[in-house]
Image (cartoon, rainbow, N blue to C red):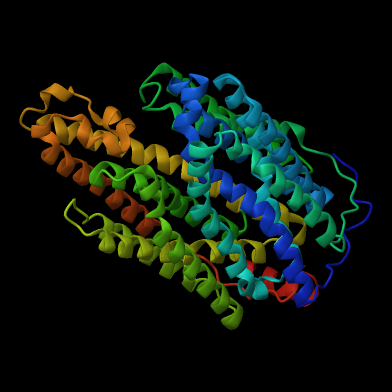
Length: 526
């Protein structure tokens, strides 16, 4: 057991509105760094694979980053509770910048995958530390007023990323997809040094739970390897998937045992006894399956069903991101005004469910303008959900667990996204393999045409015989209906879960001290 803390963290520092804006502006650079990576890399993947002669390992350029970034997120949260947000944010940015340089210098696919895995070690802390730092600066009651700034970062990245990626690939080199991170990252480092000077530092003696960290990373990696490899590189019923699944269960059990006995647990078990934390993160996990799975598969739907070019299908996401920003800004302002948060994830999940149901009616004859409306409805729902759940968790946890609680939202969101991509992919391939072989004359496509059509992208319909193109296009659109109906079902389940979310009084200070702490504790005890 570790020694008792020698001193508690300093009392929360109060910041003026002007100082708060300056701090958020600095944090937005780090958030933009993380958000841009999610959109810009995908555009350049085909060119990377061609130049490095590694088409067969293409998916691992994304999966390697996802594995490490998701696994280390709770570790960043805990370490920031012990050492402070500023130093952990700067470590995350520094790692991300250094490894971005290495990614741009890679001369083989193996090197690129390795450097992307290392890049994830920095990427895993970027968003979690930015959100946790904001929680140190702005009270839960006032946080919604600044939500528009935060939401605008992701909206900008979703538009700028595909455009920049296309420009780099066509006119420079795909390596600039990574090198663009250097000036942005250096700017984020300078901004954090200047703007976070007054942020209270931690002065605690502590003992790091190294074993817990290793177990969490190993367990998460096994789960993500299952969702990444299953159905793509190896069959779902293969020995590899079964062994990885068994290893994940064993490691998670060992992790629970370790976290219960550790004095400074990476994910403190007391958090899971907090009903707000448990319900909010359960709803967060389910909503993320729908959200990230939908964002990944919507461009694919437009490419396959409408034969739309990749860059155009990416731009079709603007209504979705625009709706997300509108929902986030609106809910943030209303939470700050009325001091309540529960109604917003409920409205958001109902809206997301409606949006998914509307998308399940889209056919190849549906106008793209109507598709944009359906996407905007979906985005509006997403925007109402995530900020409110983050505020609910940050408001309910003790100040000593603020980093871990904030990181948990990012952690379960990443896990949900991984599950969503795997689940929707399996459903889509199953539907394609069930619908297309039954078409007259489709035997020339084989008994399992789904994977080949997915990999063909915008050329999917053109790749089949002319006599089959119309019927195959209709079958593709129908196959996606199953994905959107599944998304609607999961949104409804998340809605039912969110009904159990407790409505706690929102704190008006950045630390649960004095009467505010007593009010929250009494509400949780009810």
